[in-house]
Image (cartoon, rainbow, N blue to C red; front, top):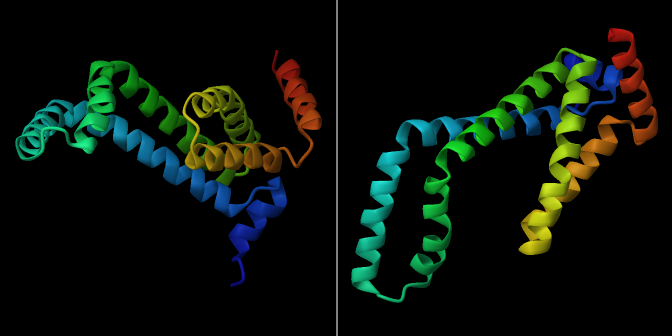
Amino acid sequence: MKPDKFEQTVENAYHVSWYIIVYKLIAGILECGAGIGLALFGKQLMSLYGALIAGELTEEPHDLLVTISERIVPNLFTHNTILLIYLILLGSVKIAGAIGLIYKQNWGVDLLVGLSIILLPFQTVSFITHPNLIDVIYILIGVFIIFYLTEFNPKAWISRLLLRIIILK
């Protein structure tokens, strides 16, 4: 399958893959949508969750799924405001960065690389505390995107970023 002219222009201009743009755009839309969905329908989801758990416990009092979900789901709704702000901001930044890459803007690359670098320690701690294959894949994709967007030369990217910051002042 041959890439179209617009896709080739974006990839050649900024060493940006169309796949990275689509990945970040979809991830941003899903995260922002989840945050907005929790904001709008959080109370209804919690009552639905309570009804489903009650139904499961009447059938099987020691259900494994209920035991696991009771450790996770109530915490999501307890820290609802923090989670909403996090999801909406994270999704919005990813969407903005992807749009910046589409329009061949330096700030799009800087935004996505900076966001990935900021999130990397949190993802690593999450993996260390609860190791699983999904976290490994997610961390590796994030590291690859960082290196790919910086053209496998992070030192040069940092120099260009600092130069642009100094020029703006």
